[in-house]
Length: 88
Image 1 (cartoon, rainbow, N blue to C red):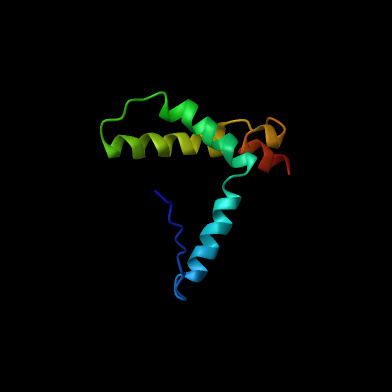
Image 2 (cartoon, rainbow, N blue to C red):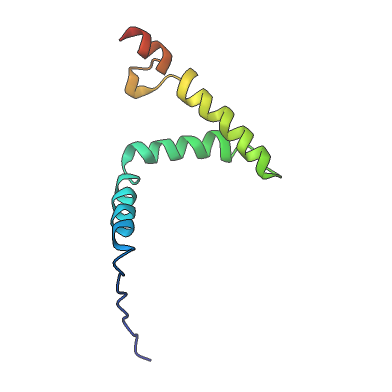
């Protein structure tokens, strides 16, 4: 059985969206994003068994606040974002 190769034509209205999607996909695959994804998975997703979407949202908001405000970051010389902002 021969494999058939198909080429998909991109219509004019979707071309800019697809170009943006390709750009974002390349950007979101960088090492800094991989590090974030690993931290998110280890610290939140693997630590809880969610039963409702509401639980997921609440835990994500709490984790996001902690990550963005209270947690020391290696990129900030192991300071929290608040300490880094005050030191600047």
